[in-house]
Length: 78
Image (cartoon, rainbow, N blue to C red; front, side, top):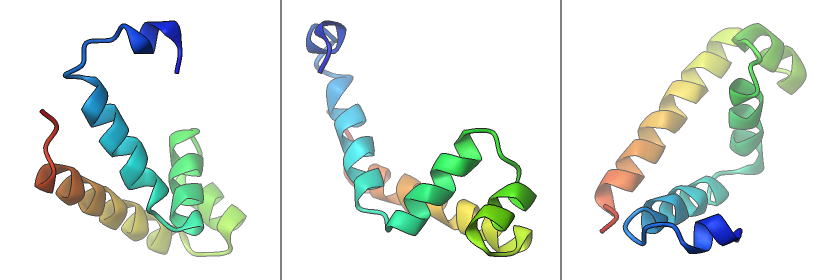
């Protein structure tokens, strides 16, 4: 944890901790998908990298976002 994070407002830290924990609970394949998507790769390139189809990548990405949102909403940060 950096010095800036240590002095960060406590109300913001729990959400960041929850997001990190939720991401770590994903499978390695799902973590890799999110890493590639958010590094700027389009669905076709991600599909090529992961040996899948662009449609499956888009669908999986959408489902992952819904899953993460539901998980975070069920355990709101204080």
